[in-house]
Image 1 (cartoon, rainbow, N blue to C red):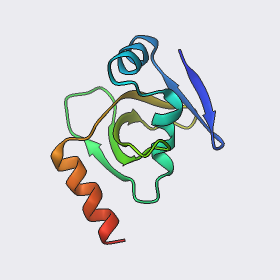
Image 2 (cartoon, rainbow, N blue to C red):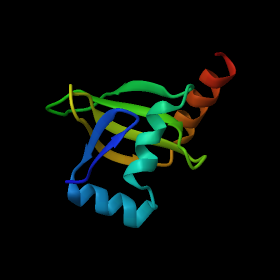
Image 3 (cartoon, rainbow, N blue to C red):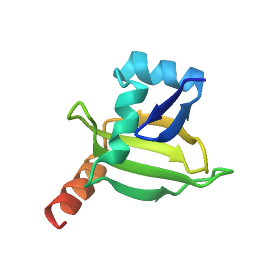
Length: 101
């Protein structure tokens, strides 16, 4: 399982999902983690039928790419589920937050 310390926080990503996201979308673990540190990042609850509380964060990565992350908050480490380019709605929510901050 890929694990990284980024700006003092520990993140992990399940091997199979990491490989799929990296190969299919060219999103590295480091780039995904950097999204959390965008001052304008927007986090909402991922409403679904999951056995855990999932969150969606949309923010600008260190590579200046707008990404949405699905993740689970825990004390240590943060568990990333997936990362992708945001939907139109997620992008608009991010742009609204940025304009109104």
